[in-house]
Length: 402
Ligand code: SAH
Image 1 (cartoon, rainbow, N blue to C red):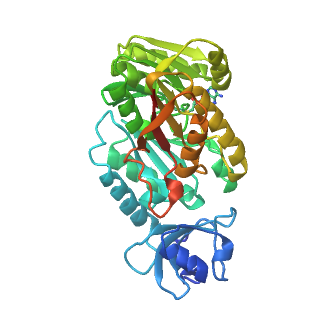
Image 2 (cartoon, rainbow, N blue to C red):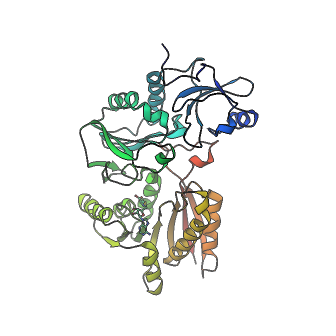
Image 3 (cartoon, rainbow, N blue to C red):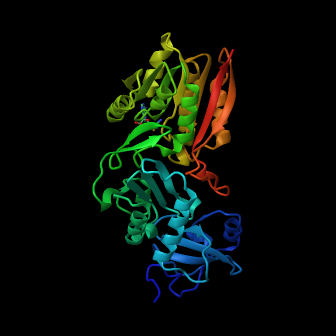
């Protein structure tokens, strides 16, 4: 019997893309509007077979009739039909987990499913030891949680599975914004170990799914550079970079954030890891930097990791100005040979745009700035070559040259 919510189309035939969209899909683009599809009925929140304008198979896709994104492709799948959802999710989830072999220790934190890059558009799964945190933004995936959750819980021996569906992207799909316990017992706090450092994770209340797992490579770099340095950790959240710096032998670390809770966790983290030299500053970073500008304080290593200022293309100009001002202020705080690790996690700010604004920020300074290294999210957040938007995190290591 066919699965009623995994039907191809009312007639069972694949959904076809028009000529232009077919070309895009062949090049790997996964997102399509209603106008990109040939006429025909599309049901909401289903999994469908997709074919190009000539009828050649393009694999499977998830539909929506309530948002602009009518179809998200999720790659090829054996056979000609639409698989049952149990079969589909088991295959995709198993592969995604297998790709992260080596990151699945009992106290590891890692992203296990990274949406499109893992052939699962609209699904994020992060693992913090015994806790799995899901974030669902595709209506078909939302309808299939009864297949996804038990499978994942068993595969990974999870004691707690949480949905952090309190993200605004769900509004576009008319899905409720909520945080829910989906499986097991309510674990409100757990600990992961990254590069030998313990980080406290609050899956129900922390930012995103609890932690910024994507900055793992940058935290390792900071630890390696920090020895003997005075470190300034701007937009610190719970001090991930500060703890990494202190563990690497930093002389001091000053964590600045507007969230009091996050700063308290930073302090707890320092105690838990027996690290000395952390100070916290509860401030708006823009105000804090303007105040510092007048004074003599300088730092040997500044980390600048602001939130995504450009949530949409419309906000781009303002965001670029904001990033440029911050980078200029941060560069002025460097001691001789000092490092600035500067980050942008806005999808809409591309790497060339980011480098350009950093260049503008450095113009007119009384010293030269070297670009020492480029980093991105860790390998558990695979970017997809044909989807530049999936490479959202840009990190540059700059150094003051005198
Ligand atoms: N560097 C962190 C992640 C930073 S996320 C890590 O690696 O874990 C962005 C942080 O910026 C959040 O903690 C948020 O509370 C804080 N924030 C946002 N706007 C701010 C502002 N104007 N001033 C100070 N903190 C701000």
